[in-house]
Length: 171
Image (cartoon, rainbow, N blue to C red):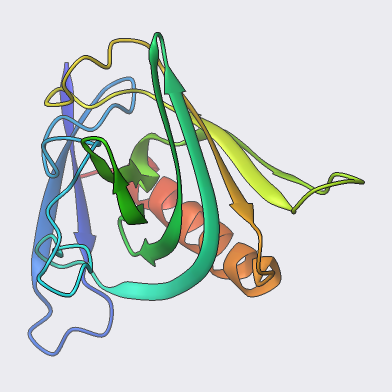
């Protein structure tokens, strides 16, 4: 069984509508095709999906993701958009240069404030159909080594709640 998520582009002059195909379990079936190494522009910003807007960026992020035997770890910049969270590594580590976390498929997100170490956000995301070699759920962690978690959390959780409301709304 499949259902369609219809959402309006916020602050759009044309009021364009975009669609994301979402399975009944909440897994994103199309757009973007892969989580690892999403398309980046020449100045290393995430290529935007139709109707997507970048809402916030943060530098000094440490990103870790693990799915089965696959592990991704790097330092770089984080971009929060109306559809996803995109991490872009400062330097490519092997074939890993960026990672995509769709808001529509996130679950078990939790903000952590350890006694030692940086504040961080952790969660789980199922792999997208086009992701190479990622079969198991992806457990991820975003550590804010240079601070800035407060503003990020406010915007992130607002966008996450809005995405979940749009997904729950009848088509």
